[in-house]
Image 1 (cartoon, rainbow, N blue to C red):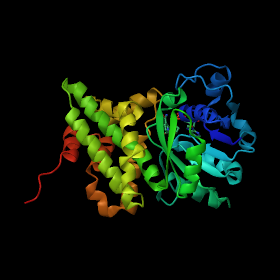
Image 2: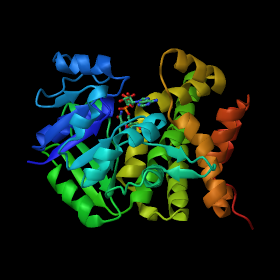
Image 3: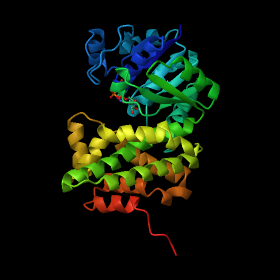
Image 4: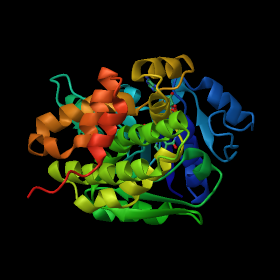
Length: 350
Ligand SMILES: NC(=O)c1ccc[n+]([C@@H]2O[C@H](COP(=O)([O-])OP(=O)(O)OC[C@H]3O[C@@H](n4cnc5c(N)ncnc54)[C@H](O)[C@@H]3O)[C@@H](O)[C@H]2O)c1
């Protein structure tokens, strides 16, 4: 039987643990030093506090001090860590990662290097490992419309596994699949890794349309749909500019994940608060006070830097990203006009 170790006992790591048990894998779940209360609940058979679903008792849990034991003998290691913690946990887990046949990533975000270069997570992880003399096994980017609570509860879920070596992603798409957890295999690691943080950025913008609707007491569905279409176009353009297949943005990792992220979650809530007129800084402070981190907020600035570094030729074709940066970082009073201007197509030139 294959064995997997999932690093991070938060919402997604724990949800994936349930899916892997259903797929017949021996499943280890390691909690960071921030996860003791989550591991307590899992071990007590109580619903996981973040997703309100019981984690299968077949999942073997490990505390932060038991990282080595958690990873021993696993063919697959998974990073299911919030993007801020990815570099640190990667360094800690290098001995186990070096022994594994594959490293899966459910984490979403960019990784800024010390020299200011903005890297996609797989590149950043390979760089960190290389600095320690470690070669990372094939990386599988896990993407698509997967809300942790639904995945954990065995609601129908479609996901995509992407690895530059298609035989690797195909192998795991076959062996990790279960009745209601369907996996598409792709070779577009870059495309999935671009869509993952970018859809968080764009979900904030979808939320602004929702907030305007609340503020005005009138539907703003047309604006939201135009925002959605522009977001997908920009994910595709940016992906292609840095080496992705353009169609990945139109599939599960792009359209699919943007839809699910825009329907619920912290990025959308943040955008809704901005749209209601709370102001981007005040809204972020309110959410921070409620211990709600908004992954899309830091991703906006990093995405703008990534474009400047690696795709300056398309910067003017990304008006929604530019609008996101202005609204989120400058906190302007005319945020509505800025969003509208970014997504309504311009009159054709004569
Ligand atoms: N929740 C979902 O539906 C979902 C779906 C797909 C992907 N993801 C991605 O998976 C990753 C984890 O998300 P989640 O929903 O499980 O979040 P979560 O907040 O429930 O869990 C975050 C995990 O990261 C760890 N962590 C947080 N800050 C850290 C730090 N500074 N140093 C080290 N570790 C730290 C926590 O201990 C925990 O294990 C994110 O990148 C998220 O975008 C989430």
